[in-house]
Length: 183
Image 1 (spheres, rainbow, N blue to C red):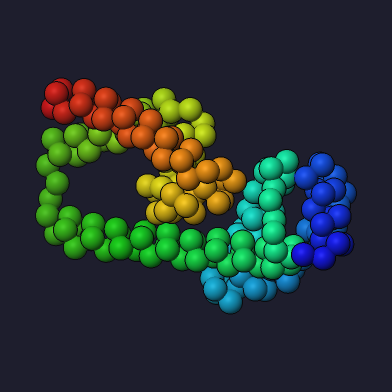
Image 2 (image 1 turned 120 degrees about the vertical axis):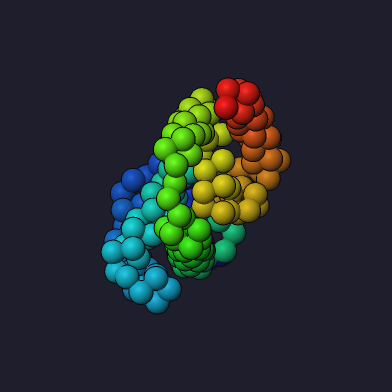
């Protein structure tokens, strides 16, 4: 990393919003064009780039970049694009599964009620978690991220991710146990 990048990063980690805005203005359009190559959609690409910059600013106090700033930004956008593609593919997979298994069968009112109750229990368990724990659980289970990817994205250790996932799963077991006994 060159000295200019070090100076810029030091100013950002110290909370210099003007320096952050300059970096945003310098790279935003180029990163959006880069993201379009992966996502084939300008709106989604802009969202990915905005989220990337948001996460950088959100974690600016603990930001640790060892490569050049440009390299870091492009790598972060690429990784976020790939995660978006994985999430989309997962959504399509579940949608196709649902269509193939449930569209030709009629779902009984009891099954539909149980599904709604289970969904409510899951949401209640999720909302009972501390914010960081909930965020880690969603990244793991809803976005399909691996523990090391979550740790990197949140600038925390893999052990912290593991501990939070253990806490979340324990909470879910308690809520789901009560639900299973009631059904």
